[in-house]
Amino acid sequence: MSSRRIITNTTATYIRSIITAGLGLFSARWIFTGLGATDYGLFAVVGSIIMFITILNGVMAGSASRHFAFAIGQGDPDYVNRWFNTSLCIHLILPVVLIAIGWPISEYCIRHVLAVPADRIRSCLWVFRLSLIVAFVGMTSIPYLAMFSSKQNIAELAFWGTLQSVVSFVFAFILTKVSGDRLLFYATSGMIISLVFQGVQILRARHIFSECRIQYRYWFDKGRFKEILSFASWTMIGAFGSTLRDQGSAILLNVYFGPKVNAAFGIANTVSSQTNQLGVAMIGAFSPEIMASEGRGDRARMLTLAQQASKFGAILVLLFAIPLVVEMDYVLKLWLKSPPVYTATFCQLIIATFVLERLSTGYMLAFYAYGRIAAYQATLGSCLILTLPLAWLLLRFGMPPTSVAVVFVATMTAVTIGRILWARRLLNVPVWCWLRDVLLPVGTVTAATAAASMIPRCLLMPSFSRLVLVIFASVMTTIITAWYFALNKSERYAVKQAATLMCDKITVGK
Image (tube, rainbow, N blue to C red; front, side):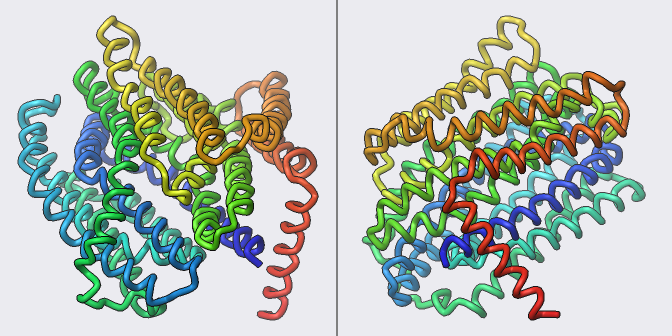
C-alpha cells in the first residue's frame, strides 16, 4: 500500500512538475521580453537578497515535516497536534524577528552596494518590500503545508501548485501588454497570487486535518521548541551554504559584470530549477514515508526507500535534462530569440549540478529521519559555503562569468561523495551498495540516453524537427533502459500494481 501511495504521489507531482516547468519556461520568455535584460537582472538580484532573509524558510519546513511524519509513524494524532502547535508558534515569531533584522540591512544594500541604475532604485526597493510580505506569509504557512506532505496528501498540493502556475502564466502574458513600471507590476501581481494560494491551502489544511487544530496550551512547549530549533539550526548550515552559493553568486556576478550577466544567470537558474522540479517530485513523495518508517522503527525499509529516492530522482531529472543539455543553444534561441551571452553554458553546468545532487539525495532524507545530523551538516554545509569564496577567487583573477557554475559542479561533487561516506559512518551502508543500486543503473541510463540523443544531433542541422527527434529518442531510451536496467523485479511489480489500481479507479469513475 505504501509503495502504491509513493507511486501515486510521484505521478501527481511529476505531472504537476511537467506542467509547471512548461508554463514556467514559456512565461519566462514573456517576463524577459516584458521587463528587458536590465530589469530582469535587477529582479533576479533583488530576489537574491530576499533569499538571504528567508533562509530559514526551507530549513524550518524540513524540520516541521520531519517531526510531523515521525510522530505520524508512531500513530498518535494528539501527539502530532502538539508538534503542529509548537511549530506554528515558532513560525509566527520567527519571520517577525527575521524581517526586523533583515529589512534595514537589505535596503542599505540596494541603495549603496548593488549595481542598480539610479532611476531604478525606487522600484527595486518596492520589489523588495513586496517580497518581504510574501516571505512573511510563506513562513507562517509552513506548518500547514508540512502537514499535507507528512500525511502524504501530496496530490492536493500538486493540484494547487499547478493552478498557481496557470494563473502566474496568465499574468506573465499580461505583463507584455501593460504600460508603466512593469517591474513593479510583476512584483505586485506575484505577491497577490502567492498570498491567495497560500491562504487557500491554509484553510484547506485546517478543514481536512484534525491535527491542525490550534490549541494555545501546546504553543510554548520548551522541549519541543528546543528539539525543532536544534534540528533546524544544524540543517541551517546546509541551507545557508546552498543559499550562499546560489544567491551570493548572483550578487558577485552583479558586482563584477552588471545586470545583463545577472539576466543570463537568472535565466539559467529558471531553466535548471524547472528541470530539477522533476526530481523534487520524487523527494516529496518519498520523504514522508522515509520519516514514518524510521518513526515505526523499520530502519531496513527506510534505507531501501532512501536508495530508491536517489536512483529514481536522478532518472527523472535525466528524462529532460539530457535533451536540454544536447540542444540548449537551439532551445534558448527558439525560446528567447536573443538570449544573453553565457546563458547556454550557465544552463548546462547548473543542470549537471542538479543531477549530481539527486544521486545522493535519498541519503540526505535518511539522515533527517535518523536525526543525528550535526556533524553531517557541519561537514557538507562547509563544502557548499566554500563555493562563494572559490567563485570570488576565480572572478578576481579574471576568469569568465561561467567559472562560477564550474565551481557549482565541483562543490556538489564533493557533497555527493560526502553523503555517501556519511551514510557508511552513520547508517552502516557500504559504499558498494550505492555504487550497485544507484550509480550503476543511473550511469547505464545516462550513457544510453546520451548516445541516443547525439545520433539526430550529428546527422541533422539545427531545426525544430531535430529538437523533436532528440527529445523523442532521449525520453524513449530513458524509459526503456530505466525499466530493464534500473528497476528491479519488485519495483517493476509495484509500478504495474499502481498502474492497474489507477486504471481501475478511472474505469470506476467513468
